[in-house]
Image (cartoon, rainbow, N blue to C red; front, side):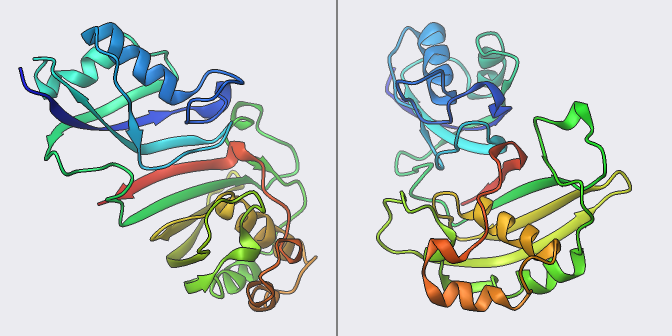
Length: 247
């Protein structure tokens, strides 16, 4: 049978993994997917995702593709994966796509969500999925500050110095805030692409503003400086979710 290209959406809890991409220092999500496919089809194949996530970062809607000569009907792939993947990784859907499709290079937008647990005492059941901030946050100041980040900017100040991308210009379409009665503050970022640690550094900076440790209008100066040292800390990984990928 000729090779087919299959596109999948996968959710995973990143708590027990050294990130998405295969590496030598621990188990990864990519490794789990590729090993599952090999057990199902007896084929060695490479899985290509929309992008990497770091150790401890989660995904609700990560997208990946792979090629296979297996005759498994495409709608059966989520069931096949379910029998071979650990319980913290779940393939939600699968579809056959044109040979020209690429999970990484065809991305037009991504949405990340970050959860801040803003309450005096932590919720122990949510400790793997949020950053606990016990002091009250001025969310209105954070919303005001976030408006400076929307649009096309050079985000050098908001990415890790280890970033390998030469061009640091990205466009953020929208930043929204949603807070529930339990003190969970969800900050959503939708844009055409994100640099290494960019969302976590934006969150760390916004939290500094929410704690009144930086003024809301400091974002403009931080962007202009193009200096990582001017921004706030990198928020911890466990609050970050790759929520949705658009093509």
